[in-house]
Length: 159
Image (cartoon, rainbow, N blue to C red; front, side, top):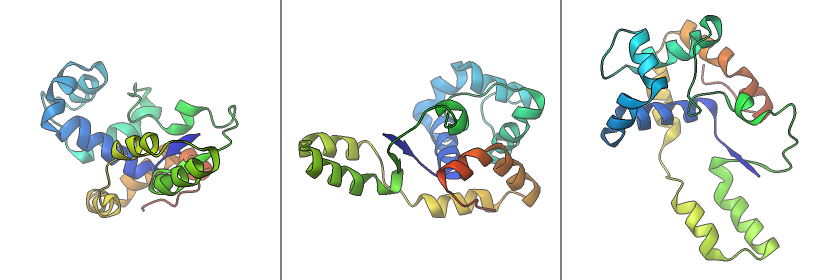
């Protein structure tokens, strides 16, 4: 089973968690991939969402390395090679786990533990807020970078 989320939601979550969360300060100042982004923009400790998306959009053209948190799922999970028999969007995880629990006799304690680890936020509103501040050219460049994810997983772009 592969649990996925909309590419824009996933990337925004990575940005918020790795670059804005104070608990991640040590990670971002010591992780080689985040340090490359800082260096790319001549920044020392922080980058804007616009800079982050710019880096992602340029990564293919300039052969810039990506961290697994912001690498397209199509590259991480080899959709064209691996035949995933169950692909579940994160927003449908609770329903899917409930069905699987009943069908396969999975104890409720296990499914509850999984659900507790997936936070529920109004990600659509956050995506619209953050991506709404980007110009259409940068939004399109982001879409092209994650086009295979959109296509294979059946997500519409937030353009």
